[in-house]
Length: 581
Image (cartoon, rainbow, N blue to C red):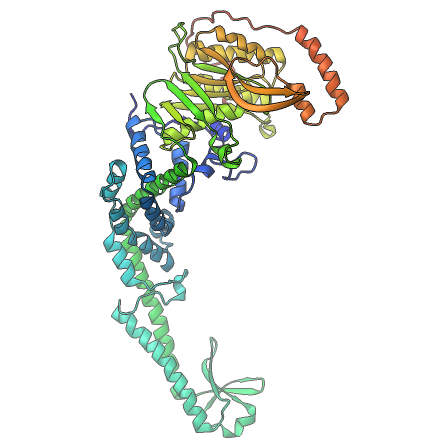
């Protein structure tokens, strides 16, 4: 039985194959599963969603708690709207707290923490009357009133990013600071009055008081008025067309103003450090608040997507079923026009490898059909629905029953790794080896075109042996897409069934119906696809004649009882293969 805290194992190759968070071709999130599910309002919520996708739960009770919460929010649009409004202003509380702990938090960072904590009492009120996980979150959510009030009483609204810009302490918070600010601002007012007095005294209307960092405050007078300069003016600097002077009164006031400004900034920085230390003392409380707000953010996001897309709640079981009715690919559903995506059904059950009795539902589905027919979409779709269900999301289907998957493996496509000297086929076999060595009876395996990277006979032999091993040694739920039509004969094994993606031929043209139905395809339609791609007509004609010759000499699959499972041995080349796992 599953223990709380465990997660579905999804390796990096599977994450890439299924494009869980990033699209392989672009590196962007748009077009990935995360891109479809992410309607979060905060960076920390978005990061938590990725964690849920990368490591879905395997505890039935924990999964159902999440699904209950999503269903409750989905059924209450008013609650969803209110939570979204509050979460929009939270920002990245997790990163802000980290900046506090590293001593790098500035006035604006602390102000944002104040804004984030200010919403907590409202969130607690909104969750009143909720059940299950939402009630648990409400009951453990700390309102952090003391933190919010301390920040609000210390800092002005609209704090600067850089502390040395000053002016961020709220008036009347600290008497010493208020006194220094008053002295600094009062000194500047005195200088304004002093300028007016000197203009009246000298009769020089253009006289002005200026300031620079080298000479401080000065009186600037045009040389045209040199005769009117009082005897108590002391020349300080000569500039083009003007003289600059000072007086004892101006020097004294300069010392007072500049001293007060410097002291007020010093006091501000002291008060900022005190506030930073206060917030740091409550780091564990803020971390817990972060976790709760991020969880709410993800749950609301999942509820919003489920409602907008018309998704259904999956049934989570501890048995070995994977049953999907009217299943749709969640990413393509968003990318394609509404109503154009063809829904398909799926039914799989894992099995005891020692049992040779045919079950009502197969363990392995062999999926055949032409390129562009939808084989890869169908098998990916099943894996994505399993991930979504165990992460706590509703799923794109009319019904889904998911027996908990402990490990998910997908090998869909491969590319040469020239930098590491690894060919496509070697990488394919290394990934396949990892799947066969690590899968359990509770795993879900998605394989696409195993054996295509080598010669036809080698590839066919490897593909058949892999299917037999999955069937007779591991017994896990498997979707196996292939162009090797000979593998259809493996349906003689008790847990293997064939399905195909339908195509329709009309006047030498192919129409892809994207429907998955029982039975095996009788053609690969490769020449037709080549024609669709624009291959020259003479090449197509030659290919058709060669195909007829090749089909006359086709090798059939031999279905014989596989040998009994042997004790696992590490392959001789395992050390080399491990480089590519």
